[in-house]
Image (cartoon, rainbow, N blue to C red; front, side, top):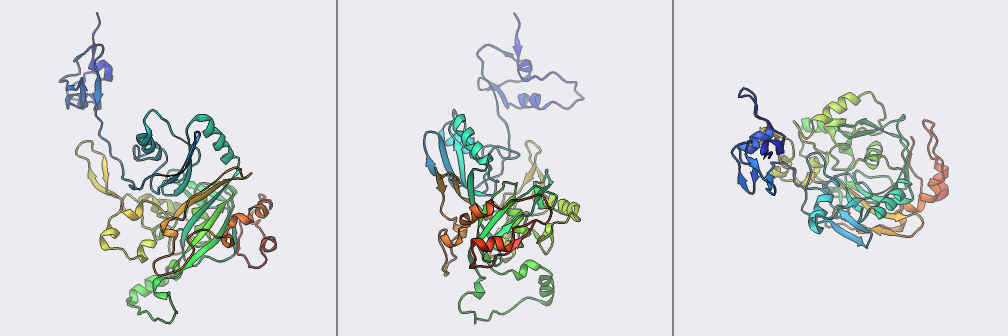
Length: 430
């Protein structure tokens, strides 16, 4: 009769005394591996048929928002959710249980496997489709991949975004797969986005009759510093409706940065420490890619990934300091490098997937505007999308304009004017 030991179950073998104990052997001797709920003292303990072996693991996971996953629509095939910002879709990297898939399994039962049909970045909020079974997920995923689904996002960007119909056709290239960095490049993949301003809100001191004088209390040194920061001249912020006609990674974030109006709290594309005082507005040259990659690699590790919005917003000193980065300390249990917890301002960016609609009109799902897109206290502004600011009106005309591979090819003013002759558009060519 052959006997089975814990050694055979875990795959561990006795090691000479001068070697470091392997992780599983150490776990057994520390009581983290138990048989029938009781610790075993040696890897040679005999295991009988029917015994239950349990191993308690030690894991670090970043916190995410406590905001619940909103349900926009549900039927027998699909759940349409309003994804909270800051929560990744799938378990990945340091995230496991704090992911959309695992949270929904915990809420609805671990026997169910949620099947996401579209992808949103961790920091982005908005409409997502979760298939209840494989057939439904495959059908909707195919529609999205074949571009038969129209998507509309809303973003909050720095400065006064131009009025009119803004079409950006700048190609996009992935510069660093490891860091997830993408940039506007003439040699990149074709990308096309339509933008339309929904609202502009000037800085608080400029609101009202415009006659109020605000004392400038900056020192000469601070004035000299600020004069070199191009973004400092872009006062206030705009709420912009965004219609991506292609699906490149970070497409909206990169195009808005290229147009000179990056998302106000974007820790990558609105980060002066990474891109410099101009925030790479209109920059499609590869000359400084290595420097940008080097600076970005430090963010969230030795330095805080700080978007420029944090310089201007009225935040308590505590919240300015409360940000995620490596502390230099190690966990006493597993020697994992420890991070500080992220501040509330780091749990998402001002980018929201507001609407998804089937091209043939069979279905359409939409969320309200997020809180950060609503008028600030004491000001009037739209609380929802309006027909006058709807980029979807332009889609049929603009989609009819063929994109070719020629560098510098762009939609011309006359083509857009034919769609809306009452306003002079600003076109950023590729």
